[in-house]
Amino acid sequence: MQFTKASFGDAEDVLKKKDKAITDIQHVLQDLNTTIMWHGQAQLNGDIANLFGRRGGWDPQVDSLLKSEAGKDDAGAKSVDFRNVAERVDVEIEFGNVGSFYRDIFKLNIAKKANQIDVGVIIVGNKEIAGTVGENIASFERFNDELSISWKHGANADCPVMVYGLLPLSYPSNTSLIDPRAKQAKEELMKKRVEKKTLTSSDQEKLH
Image (cartoon, rainbow, N blue to C red; front, top):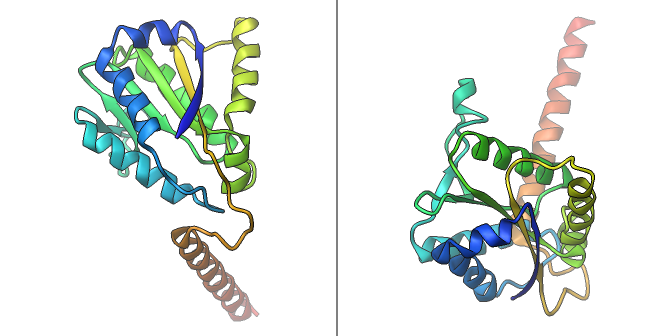
C-alpha cells in the first residue's frame, strides 16, 4: 500500500539513524494489502500487527506507564501497539476515534520523558479510509494540520512524532462490504445493551 508521511520535532531525522526501525515500518506499510472495508478497523489492525510480528524485534507494547504504575489489573501487551526496545521506537496503529489519537500523543510523550524511547510513530489512514472505517475516525490530513499548528505555536509535546498516512488504491463502492468481525462485535454490543436495559427495567419494577 502507498503512504504519505509528516515529521514533527525532527522525528524523521531521528528515525533515519535507526536503520532497522524505519526499514521495518516502511516495509510493513508497503506490504500491507488489505481491502478497505466498511467498519474494517479490526482487519486493518490485525493485518498490520501480523506484518510487524514477521519483521522481528517488535514486541507488543506494554502500557505500563498509564496502567501498571497506577495499579491497573488490565495493564499488559496490546496487539496493535509495538515497541522496538533496541532502537527505542514506539509505534501506535490508530484506526480508532479522534480522541484515541491524542491519547497516543500523550502516551508517546510519557515514554519519552521516562527515557524509554527516542521517537514515536503513529500509523493512520487518510480521510477516505477514516470515512470508510466509521464516524469521527482519526485521519492523516486532520492530524497533519493540527500537529503543524501545534508545533508552530510551541504547544508541542516533547516526543518527536512521525505520522504515516495510508493511501489505498481503491475503496468499497457500497456498504455491503462490511468487516464480518466488526458486524459480530456490533451485534454483541447491541445484545448487551438490550440485556442491560431489560435488567434495569426489572429492578425498577421491584422498587414499585
